[in-house]
Image (tube, rainbow over all chains, first blue to last red; front, side, top):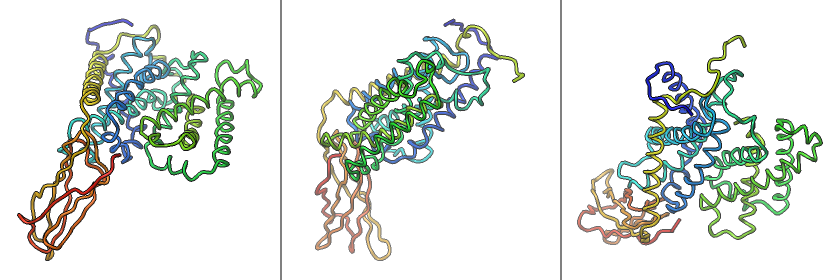
Amino acid sequence: MIVSLAFDRARETAYARDLARAFGGALLFGLPLLMTMEMWWLGFVLEPWRLAVFLLAALPLLFGLAFYAGFSASHRGIGHALLDTLVALAVGFLTAAAALTLIGVFEPAAPPRQITGQLLLQAVAGAMGALLAGRQLSGGNGDEDVGDEDEASYPGELFLMVAGALFLALNMAPTEEMILIAYRMSAGHVVALMAVSLILMHALVYSVGFPGQEAHDRPLGAFAHYTLPGYALVLLVSLYVLWVFGRTDGHGLAETVDAMVVLGFPGAIGAAAARLLV
Amino acid sequence: MAAARKKPGPPPAPALLEWAMGGLGALIVLAVLAVVLVEAIGPRAPAALEARLQSARPAAGRWLAEVEVANTGDRTAAAVEIEGRLGSETATATLDYVPAHGRETVVLTFDADPRGAVNLSVPGWSEP
């Protein structure tokens, strides 16, 4: 990465445009969570160390997204990805602060720890949105294709699936409904939902396509290579998100697995569609 | 697409604005982590709730008592019940949450002026 501290008007305005797009992405992808009351409450209900783990675990994920997607055209390489990660976090925090102030979530007398927690939860989702903005809001001009996802290796593909699963799971997990659905479902429902998740995920993976799929032009090969490991990662992502939001506390193994499968359904769709998003 | 490719070649140097935003991001993340980690390492006293009469005013033939509920503990309390006794009269209200070191306000209604005479208590809450 070249470092130049000279003021270049064209470069600054071009970057300001990218930055505006990042704010747009943070808002577009962050609004469902910004307007979810459980997210406001979780900011002060969750133990501080859980929030710390959530933020620290988000850093490598955001870095990976910055590497594969990023919100700025012509941003390539590790140095740019690192800077993009920090910028995305700044965008996430600023967007969350502005939106939560605007919709009156912040209470004037709230202790700093409460506001910090509420901002932290929202900022991670907002930062993901900011990083996806390049692809989603750039108007599909092939020449300005943002990101390096076509160069993704097999671990890179699995990483993109994790990011896609996390993105959708994060949007659903804070709500009470995930746990309620798990309570209501019988064992038969759970098995059926797992089967449908796998089939839909495979259909999406297979139709959207991954590089290197030529080697797996038999559906069964792609199933073993992408769909099965992908679904396993989706279930782990679900468990992680449920744990972060305190939804596994006081739950037995069976209830936790049920909730994992329930959250794994949107997670599987997110993972399979990651290639469309990123 | 006839449009010329705008940014060919190797990645250009980051804009000054980019350095500024990146620095801001690093600053915010470190500050947030500091707040959260200090909180995580420090002592975690259980929720401790106090109810205090803030003001009272007559309205529609009854008295409205504005009661402030403060949590001086390090843990958040959920489903907090607030009870006020004035003579033989008992008024109750429930708060969804009172965050750690936070304050919330409820209104209790009474037949008579509660100032000086009301007995406020927080009988119970749940730990989220």
